[in-house]
Amino acid sequence: MMVLPFLGLAGAAGAAVAGRRGLALGLWGLSLLGLLLLFRAHATDVLALDF
Amino acid sequence: MVTPFLARRLNLLGLLACCGILLVAFWYQFRFGEVPCPLCQLQRAAFAAAGLGLVLNVVHGPRPSHYAVTILSAAAGALVAARQIALHVVPGTGAYGSALLGLHFYTWSLIAFAGMIVAASALCLFDRQFAADGESGPRGRGIVGTGCVVLFLVLTLGNAASTTAICGAGLCPDDPAGYELLDRFLAVPRP
Picture 1 (cartoon, chains in turn yellow, orange):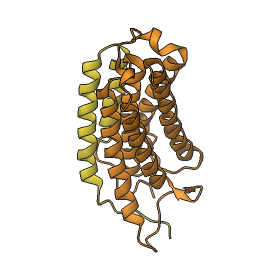
Picture 2 (cartoon, helix red, strand yellow; picture 1 turned 90 degrees about the vertical axis):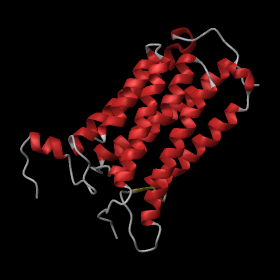
Picture 3 (cartoon, chains in turn red, yellow; picture 1 turned 180 degrees about the vertical axis):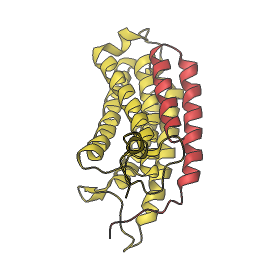
């Protein structure tokens, strides 16, 4: 799941280079949405902290 | 004043800085064995998302919508970084990962995202850069620009590979101890 924003953004960068600006912006929007949903799932993570 | 040519070069500098941040994160991950936590990975994704706005400016020429991509992504990244700082802000609650120049990476991350928001917003003030420069495509970005965009693409794909190795196909563990998928593939016994 966490890989999806990276894949979307890599696809967006590829689309930008290929001249598909609209596709790049669409993939960016989806990736950002995915990032925010994943943040919602991980915002209260408990970490093993180094005291 | 900021011409389209100068705006592209400034965006290229920003893209280089973005790549530098992702490279430093990889350096600490592989040189010192610091496996990134889920919030750390989300901050990396936000850097990649903000970098995409810079890529669009370098490849297609500066546009307000490209700056918006950088600003909105940096705002999302700042939200994640601020949450991670809040987890550790109370004295005695410890920290995650090592520090660089006295600050932990999530603190540096918040500073970098804030800097990106300020820089992109300030650049938006110069309207002349939005005039058509007729140099979209390879001619406009040059060899250095092309190299930078390729580096950004490689780093984003590298983060995708690293994240898959750590988390597999599901949600990441709250406190990752290693490369779950890689260990499973190599049949490394887990403690």
